[in-house]
Length: 217
Image (cartoon, one colour):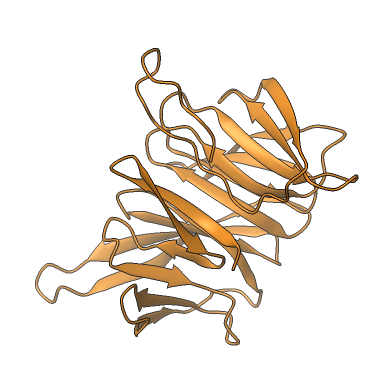
């Protein structure tokens, strides 16, 4: 199966199949989507057992999700073009984990295909079938700016550097393969690379800037 999510644990990349992400900060559980009822499911990594169901708040198909490393915020997007921010809370007495809808973000004109969430820079990046990537303020639940190139196709993958906030977007090439574009956190276009491969997800290493050479997976 195609890889849909990559996370680094102790500098080792760990991949999950499509339509799954880890339920951070505990890697013993994952969140899945693409189910018949349009809801999210929290499942065991070991057995696949469903621990809980998170009810979708709109009649749309969830296509992608992202989460902060501390597990506090979950972000989802789908066919309605609306970005949904969820907040995870833990009841210390009952030890029950709840994920509740926090806010909605509107700005895309077509399906949302990819999401990255940065705890370090407090931003969300959402890639869409409308050929754009929008950067949002995670704390204020507000629009910041749009990343767009006239030659870009649907943005199928996105990642945010923990080190400097740079953003990598991947869009489908009209001639086949994928196009990777590098942007600064302020929205400035920095570089482009054409790949003959069909890229389904990406992640950026987080070594110390100036000492380590960070790479894109």
